[in-house]
Length: 363
Ligand SMILES: *Cc1c(COP(=O)(O)O)cnc(C)c1O
Image (cartoon, rainbow, N blue to C red):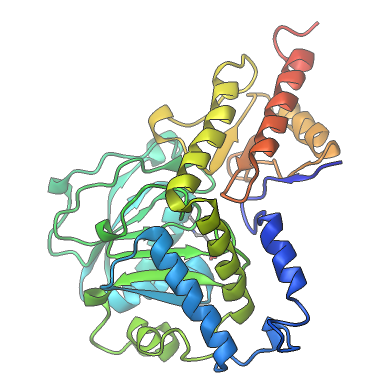
């Protein structure tokens, strides 16, 4: 049985990458040491982290006036680090698009001296759309405007970025980094946990425009962007193995044709699934059409019992982790860059067969 893993994160990795990691596991490039055993100050490891950064810069077209940081603590720590470094004594603006935006808002509110303003929300319709933000809604004295480019749980995404004027856009890109066509220069800060579209858990990427690095030290050096940047992410021991895996994934993406190709493939894969949902009389997408995510695709039958049956039958034939998030219910297919097209083709076939058996037209 072929297993297809639809997990929202930690998520499927390219088989090729896992095989390469396996081949190098006991003996990295003739060192007779595993990457896991290398000192983070060794020249062998230095090559890995530098190469990872260079590859990412190339893939995303990151301009020279941006720093790339390899941190820990997950995207969730960035919910606190951002206001702590950038917004004390200032206002931080937020768009509330769902579960992750809410967490970012709530963490910012807990940082003393930060004024949090939610300028738009789609909570009125259970976060099934991206609310419109226009420039006149944005206080031009604010430290930043925070958005969640892709809501992993709700399955909505920004096709176009809001115009924030001079206010930098700060983005949680955890679930659609490297699967979009955004331009880095349109953001002040981009951050993402690695375990969705990049690699193994334990690593958080932060891409920050240099002029936004804090000038005043933050009370804890580990939480201070300036300290992390000045030390090239080696202030303390970074997540060495996760950075190595990220490097392998970046190489894999480069060989595939870069971000343009991964974005194109993401569109092809998502379309196949959305077309199936849209032409079905059984399955529905709960999300507004214009704002549909390419990477996290929720769908429902409208009948909780039938949803459960679908998930159980799917699991029995190798479709893992299709259960929707407990806050939304139904099903969710998370199909990041490493998720193979064949897996979507197989799922679509399975859905069509399920519909024949259980749908409105069933005997
Ligand atoms: C998964 C996720 C997070 C949380 O990431 P951690 O690395 O577990 O802290 C935050 N934001 C989004 C959009 C996510 O998908």
